[in-house]
Length: 83
Image 1: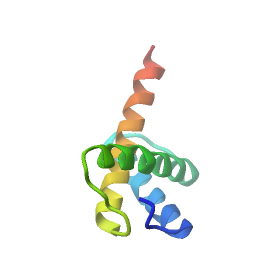
Image 2: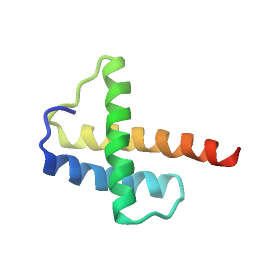
Image 3: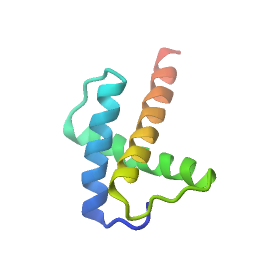
Image 4: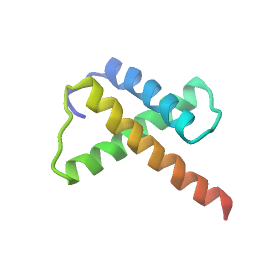
């Protein structure tokens, strides 16, 4: 997701974090959603690039990929916390 500027990363991070929070039935605050969304965007971007897809500069695919990565992140964190 290198085609986005810092403001776009923040907006996409908040949206993706919020969507992942709702999908995973969690309750976080705005800052946590932002962090989860941005880290999720990195994870989702890595997964998408590994599969040969590049969403650079495209908002909707960027949000979907970031949300996918954020859901993966929350699932992994949930598994770690259970142990």
